[in-house]
Image (cartoon, rainbow, N blue to C red; front, side):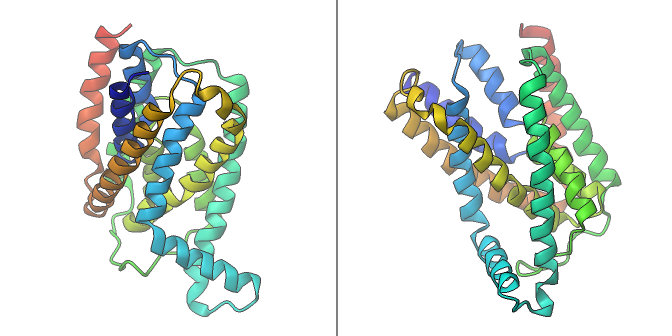
Length: 271
């Protein structure tokens, strides 16, 4: 892999991981165009770089959740901890559902042909349009230190959606945000929950693939890997910050107008 190819893949990962356009689908398309066959562990390393972007952007919320969890463990919870405790429980149950679906998918689903990736783009596009119209009509009026409670049922529903989002072409962020809105979670909380829920999922995928890190240097040298990860982290911070603003404004359907033409062109011209 050349430095240029790693740079392109890293930037693409950082942008597509957070914008609801499917990073796995876009990486599959670009790899097809480049004629590359990358090990899964390289893709996981790029995801780990974008995970660091999530931690940076949501560092205050993550620290707040950790403090609330610590108070709960020591039985010193405060009445105002209720919403954040509900978020923690929802993340746990959602991660459990996602993990089960991920294991099943890895064992029983065959490798997706490139054409089905474009079908996934279309599905994602319609989910964005539908959830934007039918989702929660009361946009969040909370500030950055407030959260709306999330029920266990809502956590299970969004976790199930995230499991579906492991399929190439189905945007993980797009389907989890859409599911949150359809579950009547307010927009700001839906955005935060979607990306906080991604943290254990990405960490789990990295741990499962960590055993193959030794084989990574056989196909990808250290410099392209470092450049790809740095590009993914930098572009991820920018795209995540931008997306959170668009979520609050209810503009997710904008990305559908990009995905549908892309999918049609792909179905026609890419084999």
